[in-house]
Length: 379
Ligand code: SIN
Ligand code: CO
Image (tube, rainbow, N blue to C red):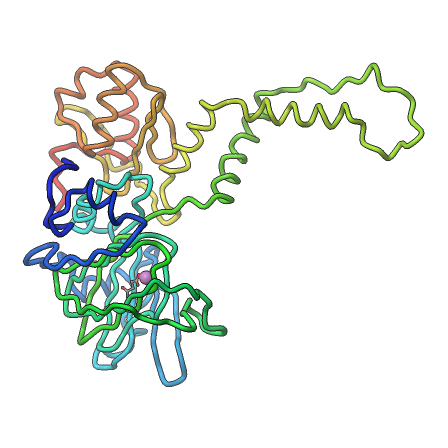
């Protein structure tokens, strides 16, 4: 993507300008971000998706008795009638299940893949919404069908209403208000309070981002380092030939404390391992994704390859990461495999000049259904 090219999607800003001025900083309302936008998924298809096992969905009803929430799968008969006001259902990760939705999400790849999370679709009847709240991640709210009134504010008081099954702000105060029409889009940075209420039947597509959380990331990486340390540091034993006789036997010897610090430092002193654990973690498929490894029985590279829409592929200076695995690559192989990760496709000529181990890797990934033949155009 040319990050210096002004985009209609960003209201005439270049991706570079958008990232500098708005990303994680301030909202942006874009009228006609996608002119003439016609969603490639209608209400019936979304209802069908929400009823499927392995698709994350929620039903939220705002009734006289208060807020009610139910987690999916949501059978059609379990939904309120479409004539009933003030209810909504939301389907998470639609990009994993629909090629057209996945394709739309690619327009947002001026943000690194490591940050892009998923595309959620909500359907609401008149007056429906999820209540005033804030999200801990950035979001692009693209109006897909009908109208939605968004009220937003830089809320300082983020206290939540007690005793409700949703995170709803107790004292929401809106500063601005807009009605979005199909094709309009609103970008909000993390923690920006918002409340979107459907005006008539409405569908909103939210492009959401992944925010690595300090504690969780540390735990993930340390668990990986722990396994490696156990194998790598081996069985060398603590020795204390200079240990004097003690009068306070319960006190932990300083030398043993030092030994503990040393072994942990040794285990951490492996930047290459840390980087590969990070790449493996970031490309790990979501828990509801599984690949049918039998799809490509006789994989070949003759027509080039493309990534399956569910495949996550990233890289760093030394490795290529794909769906939670790492592959060390340098030189020409690294250049070509990075191209595959960035473009999500590779032509036959590029496949042909890879080294044998890299070709083998592509064939393995194809057999696992992570890659498809390039000519196999998604419908
Ligand atoms: C919705 O689409 O109803 C909610 C999206 C959001 O507020 O993040
Ligand atoms: Co939100």
